[in-house]
Structure formats: structure tokens, C-alpha cells
Image (cartoon, rainbow, N blue to C red; front, side, top):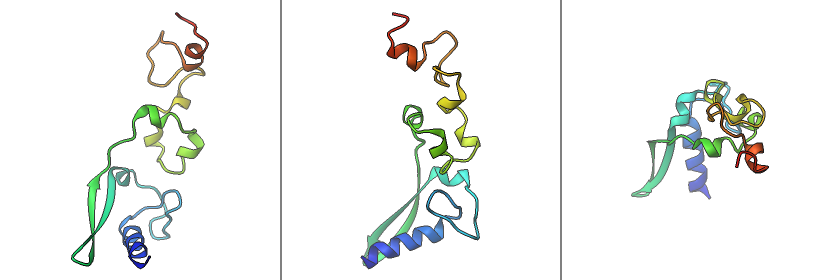
Amino acid sequence: MLLVSQCIAMAALEREESRGGHTRDDFPTMNEEWRRELLALTLRDDEVVLEHQGQPAMREDLFDLFELDELKKYYTGDELGGHRSDAPRGQRADQTEGGLGDEQQAQGQGT
């Protein structure tokens, strides 16, 4: 349990932003650069080692599963562009003109 606590504290001190449940008075806002960073902590020779790793972007189809209000807790305004809520009702943001929206596909229209 002490080892896990040490890992959490090390990662929290390294992450220089506030996002979701992770808040810092000295870094009160989100920084989209941290969206691309994973902090990996491993135990090597009885010592905790922290490494920065690249974070792949969330797939758009998964991103659209979340409600916009929930995503606002974790993403900056620039990162939220293209979310399904930006599209006209019944149409995904990534569909081209003339494509069927989710509601139309569910109703079997256009087939």
C-alpha cells in the first residue's frame, strides 16, 4: 500500500495541470499537452521509476459515446471540436453531407 501511495504522489507532482479529480493550486487549468502524455511508474531494483510515454488519442467512435458535459471535465475547448454535439441533430460530426445520421440508421431509413 505504501508503494502505491508513493506512485500516486510521484505522478501527481509530475503532472503540472488540473484535470478531473486531479487538481493543483499552482497549476489550476488543464493543459492539452498532458493529453498526449502517460506517466508510467515501475519498480526497478527496489526503486520507483517514473517515465513519460506517448498517449494515443481516443478513437473518435469512443469519444462520441460520452456526453459533452462529462468530457468538459477532462478536455480543453480546443480538444472538444468535432464531438457529435457539434453536428446537426441526428447527424454525426464526422459524416459528410448526404450521409445518414444515427437516428435515421436506427430507423432503417435510406435502405
